[in-house]
Structure formats: structure tokens, C-alpha cells
Length: 238
Image (cartoon, rainbow, N blue to C red; front, side, top):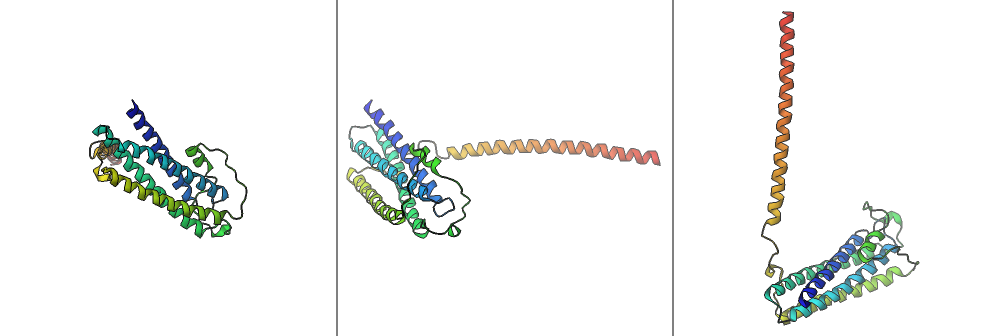
């Protein structure tokens, strides 16, 4: 029972981390655009901190379970799969944090609006952040030093995430756990998704062919009728 609860808890925590990292990526896209603002910068800061908290919780839980020598082979394979997903989330988070730092350095908040990038995004991004972290109506007071302070904090957090990933690799080596992506067994047959798409595609092609045949038949009928009328007209006039 405890193992089942542990597995479900891991999946829930990993799902939460995945959603928050996806939210962070969405917010980073708006940096430097016409929808950039102090609220956006604060949402980014809050989102990445939430992601780091979830990352620490996921790492602690998964490490503890992978160290357990009493778990079955099937459970270990599942935890290894979850570890790979967790590592992928961390890599994406690190990449997006670095990109956020670069864009924020190029586009400080005090820059004139005409220098912002026209990304096509308008309005507030608060809704997405709130949905991912259960935060609503986020409001912040102006701070003239937000650029300098936030960039300094972001740089420090990027270093922390990089160190966390290095520690994760060391823990994996110590535990002698095979968690490389190519060492994790797939959850479905190879090519299952491709086969599904092909079947859908074939069905669509069949439908299009049937529709085309019907159209040709109708056009052919009208052509025959028109030819018959023309011939009749010529016979009468002759």
C-alpha cells in the first residue's frame, strides 16, 4: 500500500512540476514584447521559485524511492521512468531561466515601448500563471530597482538549478541506477502513435476519395443532360 501511495504521490508531484515549468515557458515568451510589464516579471519570479520548490520535493522523493532495495523490478522501472521525466523538466527549466536572463538584460522595464518586440501577444499573462499555481489577481507595487534585483536573483537561481542537476547526476552514479532515456522501457508498443495517426490518415483519405467520386458523378450527369439538350435543339432547328 505504501509503495502504491509513493508511486501516485511521485506522479502527482511530477505533474505539478511539469505544469509549472510549462507555465514558466509561456511567460518567458512575453518578455520583451508589448505585453511585458512589472507584473509579468513578478509572475516569472514567483513561477520559477515554485518550480524550484517542486523540483527539490521531486528529487527528494524519487531519490528515496530509488535507494530502496526492496522494491520490485517493475516498480523500479517506473521510478526510473519518472526520474527521466523529472530530469527533462529540470533541463527545460534551466534553459528557460537562462533565456529569461538574456532577454531581461536586453529589455529592461524602463526601455521605451517602441523598442519592444511585436510578438502578437497582448493583454495580461496572469491567467496562465494563476491556473498553474492557484494564484489569482496578483498585484505588485512599483519598484525602481526591480530590473537589477531580479536579474541578480535570477542569476543566483540559475546557478542553484545547475548545481542541483549536477548533484542529481552524482546521486544516480552512487545508486548505480540506469536512468538514461535509452535505458527506460517504453509504456506502449513502438510506433503505436504512428500507427494510430496512419489509421486516422487512411480513414480521412478514404472519405476524401468517396466524396470526390460523388462529385464527379454529379458533374458527369449534368454534362450528359446539357449535351442532350444541345443535340435536341440542333435537331429541331435543322
